[in-house]
Image (cartoon, rainbow over all chains, first blue to last red; front, side, top):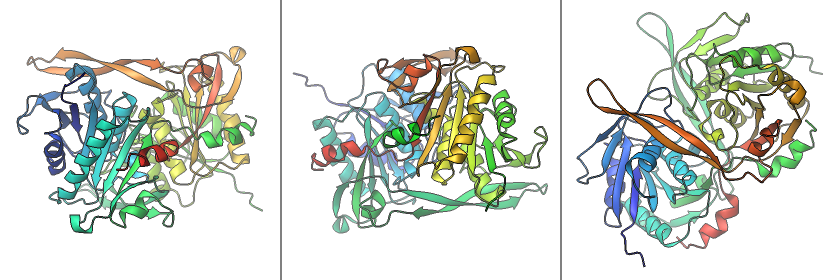
Amino acid sequence: MNNRRPLIFVTNDDGFSAKGIKCLFDAVKDIGDIVLIAPDSPQSGTGHAITIHHPLRLSKINTFGIEHAYSCSGTPVDCVKLGVYEVMNRKPDILVSGINHGANTSTNVLYSGTMSAAVEGAMEGIPSVGFSLDSFDSDADFSLSQTVVKMVVEKVLEQQMPIGVCLNVNIPDVHKSEFQGMKVCKQAHAYWADSFSKREDQFGRAYYWLTGEFINEEQTEPTDLYWIAKNFATVVPTKFDMTAHEQLSKIESWDL
Amino acid sequence: MNNRRPLIFVTNDDGFSAKGIKCLFDAVKDIGDIVLIAPDSPQSGTGHAITIHHPLRLSKINTFGIEHAYSCSGTPVDCVKLGVYEVMNRKPDILVSGINHGANTSTNVLYSGTMSAAVEGAMEGIPSVGFSLDSFDSDADFSLSQTVVKMVVEKVLEQQMPIGVCLNVNIPDVHKSEFQGMKVCKQAHAYWADSFSKREDQFGRAYYWLTGEFINEEQTEPTDLYWIAKNFATVVPTKFDMTAHEQLSKIESWDL
């Protein structure tokens, strides 16, 4: 029988100094032994990027009071790869990423560094979960999120995560008394109607800031966007096989 | 009746000065009117990253001999967003990305800036295709690729691309005489067994270069890795819905 405490890999995309990762760390520190590797600067929106044109730095940090806490100069996916192949000498029992400041519902899963770390974990065969709170406030209230994290982590350690899958957990920004529970559901079909704020620098040359509005095209169906708006935490099983299997025969019929 | 020439959006991740994008441009320039927006520096491995912490620059470039050719300081996905929301005044009829120097078969679709541009195009409702040649040589022979590009682009313009889907086309690095044809297939289950080359800088501080070996776990099944090794060009219909629909009921049974 294996009486080892679970090995828990903690990461995020907002950087090691964000409130969200401290709250994630506090939520899981009694469940197992922690290795924490997080970016040294905010990496929101870096998606599944890896660093191949520059070398990476890894530095010990003391703020978490544990032996294995590091900041990394790269992306969240770099953190996962460094953790698995350079820092840890055994495969972690679970990887948790977050708690992100801002929801990663719907197609935001593609842009999200938080979720890309969890997807990378799944690619490495590690049961992995990304957690995001539906608030961009740097001082957001993570107390409901911590309850959800504990519950999900204990469940994942007890169950068998399907191969090739991680979980995308999004938590509504409400008080515990308004929380409606958990919903397993699918990623909503939505997109960013972007616009660019065009400005001029001190030399009169144009530059652009990306901005935009998120358009939900699936408001009536039981999707993550539907349920989080009803104060449920949503759980989307998320896979890295991006093949549109249901379209294989249609594209085949094109006779390329 | 609409007699307009198709509007073709050309982008890549290797940057506007790569040989691959010039060969892509040459392959499609007689099919329609071109808008070309490509990164001003190599962006391999940037995945679906977007630039939100820095402003973006967009600069006219003259090397392609067309009015609408630009370099962009951001990622491939930034190029797509700038093209759709800032440069073009109508939706392009097709977006083509590449031709990438190096294959984007299997799970490389997640790391690939070339494919992320195509996925972003699909999210914008644009029929989109990423093309990659199975050679990292900066002076690779793209003549077979150009034949494949022309054929696929003409087919996509003639057919209706399914909603939510783009195509991931990978071309073997062989002479036309050895080419076996096209195969519509799925993304292979494979992963990078990474390792890091650890070195010391002039101050004795460690830094790391990401390196690794690609492990194919699906050699016997009819996947993209299987067919490209047999000198076929592979076509994987690729979607941005990452929900593992087939696992919804299993995760529901966990009773979270």
